[in-house]
Image (cartoon, rainbow, N blue to C red; front, top):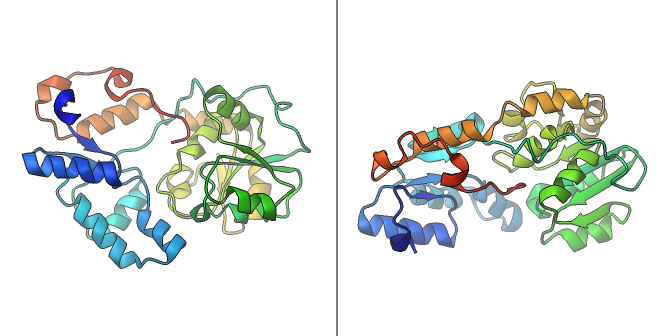
Length: 288
């Protein structure tokens, strides 16, 4: 498939089976390539099966070592990987589709008493969703997404609303109908869902950990606190316009240009001066 496509550059987005296959292809043919560190797989494995972090990171270093550039989303993850012995690290931030995700006058879209607190994302143990669902807060809790922990959480928290995976306009409508977005994960490297919520005019409540720290930081668009219940209470006081204005700082054009500058291309003239990010990279998938 790669031979047929004849790429001007090769970027490997994941360390999974497809990434391993592409890496082997490039090494065999002596093609330069770049990689990305999107997911903290060592922490995920440790959370699920207690697999030693040192072993996982050794495998990650081996995978990324031949890469011309290991792209990471945030300075926090860059520093963490550098401490773990990773090299050739470059920044590649994230963007949000502000034309799809925007504040809407649709608070009657979702049922249940207000305020509505919402989580969007994979329903799995490493996301710590039970930290959100176990909060003693007023209103209604919504979980948007699917995953291996879904049925367990449904049994444990019957009062919460589990609506399954959503995409496109339906996902955007769910975001904008919420009053606060709760992000209990401690393992994400960025959390694009944070930007989608903010672009929808919804404030964020999260732990002060990598991901939320890099997206929210000390901005007025969210509240980061080890006391997640307090974070929710305080985030509900944030005006939606503050969140939307902050999200507008993360455009697709900016992240495209950053990605392009990180590539190790076979023929630089092929992409030189290329300004159309949607044609070159394809349309981004909301929620990923």
